Amino acid sequence: MLNAEEKLVVIWSSSDREVAKEMALLYSYNAKRYGWWDDIILIVWGPSEDLLSQDFELQEYIIKIREAGIKLEACKKCSDDYGVSKKLEQLGIDVKYMGEPLTQYLKEGRKIITF
Image (cartoon, rainbow, N blue to C red; front, side, top):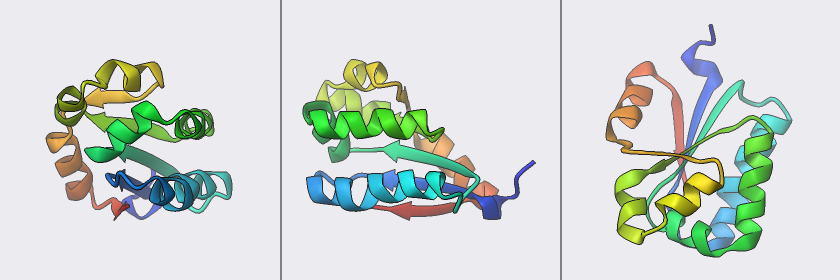
């Protein structure tokens, strides 16, 4: 079993496309590709969900990230508010209420970064 020091949660909440491409998605993908972290979860939360639902290039990047083995999650409350839950699920993202899972990740001592 991996210890918390080897687990990363990336929270992507920004609606800024450049932050998505050059920070959240790029770092997540490279962290898995180069083995910087053993276990990575990318959470799409809030405004980033709306951006992702509309941006084909970012959708392709998300598919590449999923295929690399990064677990994808999104906040159901936010995605319902934006009307994009089904679109995110079609991308292979686990859409669920994130309050409890995030709390659990914090209590487990996982490293968390936000973009």
